[in-house]
Image (cartoon, rainbow, N blue to C red; front, side, top):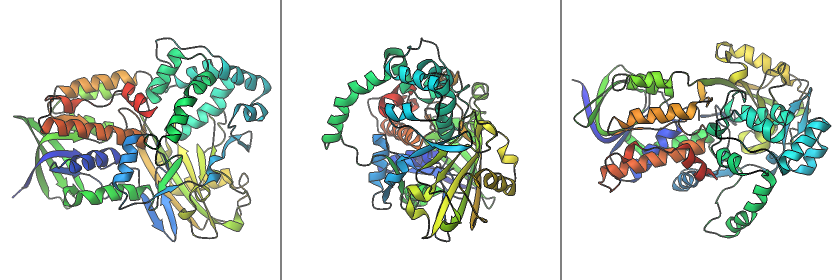
Length: 489
């Protein structure tokens, strides 16, 4: 006989979005189940301990910039310890013309930096003092950066940073969709430096007011790696977490959802709930909603996602000639012959990731620059990484440990028109009472963005189930880009 379970809320998807949503719902006292198709939760956020190394399979660190994320870390303080990156990690490099150059950290170092020519540097300096505002129409990141700071800054610095964050192409990515805070800045501010100076009093107030001061600043990780953060959230859910549980179909009738799911042993379970949260990638969202809202597929068609592969390589300390004195380096898009998007020096930022006497490199291959990266074999990717880094970092011998972790269609690309597609998607979802969406394709790809949206969805669902005055449609509202910008600033 088919097993059946009835819950107040079911969350589908065990990435950080679904985990955060379920965590808040559970804390609110609701009977919630989390269904994850994979063997483990966390999505791309996974960590493996091997031979004394902490190998991050996906994200490596987090900048704590949102109160919702601080709340999550504080709520898990009995299960995890937050680790702050070393001071050395503040130093960053760019790959330029066959060598590594330090990233300028202030106008003086920008003027003295060899990263750009004299003309490009002068144009960047002028842009810091006075630059042209944007119009009402959407623009790409390249258009924004070039208008504000000049072509060399756009091609050299901005393209590298965006590749490190979004694995995307600044010529196609929407500036306002990827970084919502830019919309207000671009519309109102002529001088980036002037805007910064005007914010100094508020920054000082936050620094010295204990109620406003953030508990963690800068780059952080977790003592067990970021996968340990996902595991800690999962532990709080207990038997309400179901892994190896793939949802095959969803029905909706009489104000209730019925989910047909298949477990890893091919047994089936039917879940029933009043509220449903889909926290799965955009393609899976389209598949699951096809019977309920066929028009979803038309809306999300064209929302591309970039694939990438993380190549972890460990070396004995004496086999690395470069001091690795910083966080690592990124590669601009005007260096097309260099095959990597960037490399992080893991132990420089977090020494606890390696045993004594070793160095750990994390190379990133793929994104918009190598879209077919998933088709490459592990041996090919390791060889490509070693060939690119051997002379640059003065590597000798073979790595003592290698770990290759592919991520297919992992990072949604917020191209021009993305905000309109998401707005239309939310309109469609609003026509299905009790349904909510969460995920990195909605309001932002960062862990902060996903955690913030997960909390907002959980609060709306909780309010609707507990008879809040927000009304029966409150659970359908998720954060808009404007709200995201306000929260992030």
